[in-house]
Image 1 (cartoon, rainbow, N blue to C red):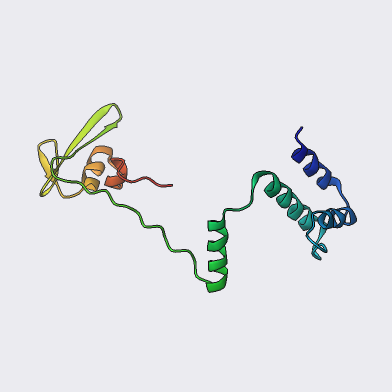
Image 2: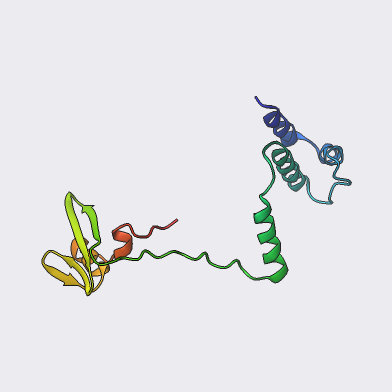
Length: 141
C-alpha cells in the first residue's frame, strides 16, 4: 500500500478535530468551518495534489474567467474536412464495401450522383444518418 493510500485511509476514519489538526499541519492556516465530510474531501484533494500535481494552470484560468464573467466557455472550433473532387470515401457496412467519389456537383455512388453524403448513408442503411459521420469525417467525443 502506498503512502498516499494509507493517508487517505486514515482520513476516512478521522474525527472532525483530527481533520482540523491535519489541515493545520499542512500549513493551510485554520481549517475552514465546514462539515467533516467536506473537510475530509478537501484534505484528500490536497494530499493527491501534493503527490500527483495540481490542476493545470490553463484550467484554473478558465475557471476563474467563467466565475468572474458568468459566461460559459466558448464552444471549441471544429475543423471541417474539405473534400476535393476526386477524393474517394470508403466504408464497409454489413459486409458490403461502399465507395463514394467526390465530384464537383456532388457525390457519385453506384452510377448515380447524390447531393449529400447523408442521402447515400440513408440509402445504404435504410435509416437517417449523418453522412459525414457515417463516412468517418467527423466523430463525437
